[in-house]
Length: 527
Image (cartoon, rainbow, N blue to C red):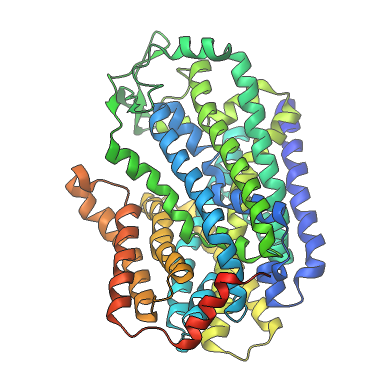
């Protein structure tokens, strides 16, 4: 290993060691009871709640996926996706956060999203609890595997290290501090990771902007690429099939060092709406919603919201621009959509000395780990608190519940490592459903639970099932018809779930007086 790589490894190692120390520090307080372990005893302040929510939400997609889309096809898709997510973040914090924080405590102090659904509708048979817990368990277990893949690929790409060793190393580190410190450790580490992520993005963008010659230099370099800088269009790289290491791969055509593009395509109104529909997913994301529930006071929602939307705007704008600036600086370096996701790494290594580059590139690890730890804890809470204690053994002690959670996290980690190392493309197609699946299954129900008193228990069950099932049906069947049907599956599934909730609620007996009284109390409650 070269001296430069050793210095980069030291920079990354310092960051990883810090996360372990935080886990040990938080363990002193986190192992007292399930409310502390799973929700930090509702003790988060604005900075921890907001930055941990955003860091856990964005994952490695922010530093690799989003810049990669911008690098390969220009502004169009990257810009509208980021805008939809920004609007979703703003509305979620502005509309949902305060009401959910209050209502989750009024609903018999619910500490997980499935438990909130169950207690909100006085579900004595725990049908909603089990259904929501199973959906969380399925999607988030696969999500954890996706984050381990990012961890392994980063190290293997930079250091030529074995993929399997790096995946296992990342899994062990995340498992350690999450098991030891619970939700408090997750929140504190995600706060630090959120700060590291945005600092890394801004630094790389700033140096890239300077080296590219500013706005005029970037515009001049990109002028030859049709519709690359068009917000209502999308660049279309010309590609060809080539054989590499015995495998056929698709690469962009390069002639005399210049990447070749077709005439480009329109990014029409329907496509824009479909892309922006990503923002609807926020209303059903447990890793974000649980941060609302963990706030100390409802009065902290406003400052938390301000911090979150500022972070979101800066981070996503920087990520998109890194892809644009990267194409200006290195137009022919990355010739496939997959390779384009490495543009952040290339720019970080080029602009900074090795030790600092290691710290900057740790932003990718921060993004992946901040999501991974949240997903693991959500899965553990769903199985231990919602299914085991809620359905199997209602008299289970706090100690047993927390040990079940730890064993669950170990099992999920092993399962996720197997996913990360399998290389099975079908698994990754299922991962693409996760955001839509959670958003459509939970999002409409969250909104109707919080803001429509007439919502009934049968409607809640029907709406959750409709949203989750429709995502799969639309993606695998209806979208193949093309045209207007080829929209992101979250949009139709979300809308249909809303429609089902309204129709079934009006067709069934209205909620009991006790449920309506709790609803009215949540509207005005301050904690």
